[in-house]
Structure formats: structure tokens, C-alpha cells
Length: 83
Image 1 (cartoon, rainbow, N blue to C red):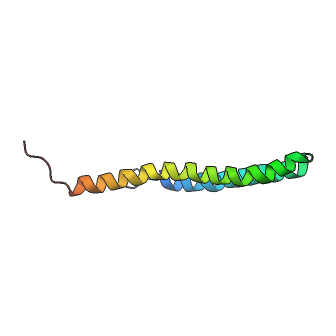
Image 2 (image 1 turned 90 degrees about the horizontal axis):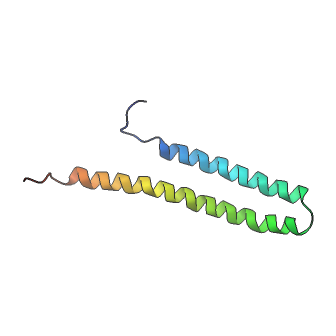
Image 3 (image 1 turned 90 degrees about the vertical axis):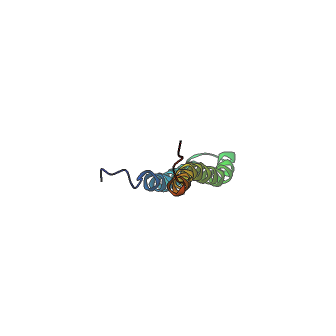
């Protein structure tokens, strides 16, 4: 648990992704059932867009961890410089 060999942040990001989707969906449903007329149409358009943007944002965060893993792998394979 106190070792930094394995990162826990990617797991946390996945949990935040699901929680964020639930919040976005509930917000869209809340708008559908409580707002009049045009707001319902707007909720039907904005909610899926917000879900896609949330996914993209979470993927960008995960990408930074993936890049770290790949750079660490390259560093582990590279012999030290003599000099």
C-alpha cells in the first residue's frame, strides 16, 4: 500500500469517470423532467456531448500516465552513459 511501484491514480480516474457519467446523466434527466420546452431539447443535445467531452478529458489524463509508463520502460532499457 505504501509502495510507489504501482500507481493507484489510473484506478481513481476510472472511478471518477463513472461517477462523472452518473452525475452528467442525472443532470440531463433532471433537466428533462423539471425544465420547460426548449430546455428539454437542449438537454437531449448537451447531455451526450458532455458525456463524450468527459470521456475525452479522462482519456487525456490517462494518456499522461501511459506516456510515463512508456518513458520509464525506455529508461529501464537504456544503458547508462559513461562519462
